[in-house]
Image (cartoon, rainbow, N blue to C red; front, top):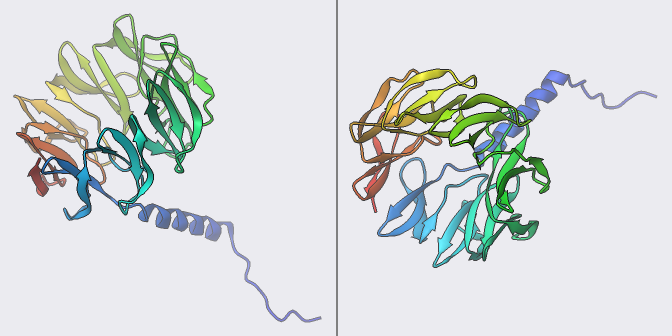
Length: 305
């Protein structure tokens, strides 16, 4: 019998390309939205500086996975990128969503809910932070959250199971395979097995971002790599992490600006405050006002409060 239709053989390379394209399309569906202050309220703008979610909230956190925590009165809930509530405000505190879970507080206990507001990890923690990308590389699917249970910090997985219980005094987020820990009054870094890979020696240590971490030593801030080697000298009065945009906020002479990965100032030290860049924009503060600049230092949203 003759075959009426013959389907071409699809190579593995073609299938792989289609999968990558589908992932790219999905990523593009996540809008780039930024929280702004307007007359004492909070709303969201797009990357062109246009308000897309009106400023009607008492407080907000940034969008992650298309969801943002927002505060109305004394309670927190969650909205989608259209500004509609997916979980009405009913929590005493809330953190960002990742892997379909958001950390919330009710009374004096913390737990984790899904996007329907259903508790997937019960209210049993003294304190909880949002889940983080914890793999050694961005492609490795490993997510953990810091929680405090019976006065001790532990890392849990998305099922609520203990991933790591390090014997430390304080614990930072496990990001890019390393977590800052405080032991004996100083900070260092452990890997995801709990092994100390950068010995405690810093006054303060933050999580890793784009292979670098910001630390404080002798009252000055600087940047190290994953081996603990200084890559930007300890010279700043304040600093925050590098992001994929390749810039980090730093403070010197009482003012904030941005450096590149070589430690060169690329956006003039001129602001009263600055946060890490995200999706091409950095939030800065002048006086009581908060605004956004692009990577050239030009305002996309002028400071407002």
